[in-house]
Length: 230
Image 1 (spheres, helix red, strand yellow):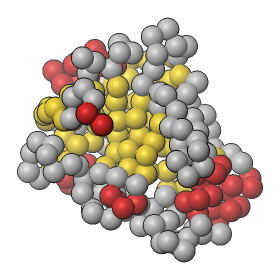
Image 2 (cartoon, one colour):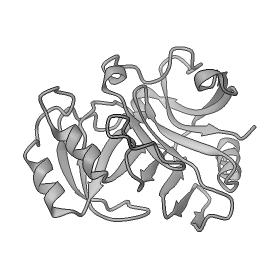
Image 3 (tube, one colour):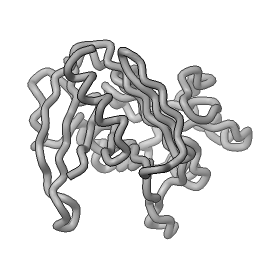
């Protein structure tokens, strides 16, 4: 077991720490409460943790570089420490689909089942899906296959927000599944505590893999983020 994997797995065993997988403008976050019911599987190369609200899997099957930094909290809150597990861009490459695409049953599911639909956000190092077993939602998404969800005239994003299907963010180093509702300021639905997602088209259009102040080594991208508890 590498030193990086040992550090990450040690933190995963403790519910005090938080995690994310994503890009600049789209992110899935995983946390769990102390004492929250869960299932855990730890192996020599990774781990899986699932709760009724979401799940995370970590698989370090490639050498990574860990780098960390602190950023200001929102609205003047406490600073946030982030440890990023980075991979060379070529090694981190995912499908990077740019249109809504059905990819079939989720054979790698940790918690829950359903058909995966790639949202087509064009992110090079993270596949971003919604997952649903609801026939009506599947039929609605089928109407928009091959179209960009970022097109202002495409109603698919609004349909997804209303239905709140599972969201799955998968990178070369793992995946996060979010089973909770999607928060919406417009609909007066707060972002839930615990596992949740954010997809912000305005930021996605900047085509960044990470914030400008994040110390990501040149030629690499962050494929997994750890937020150690203070």
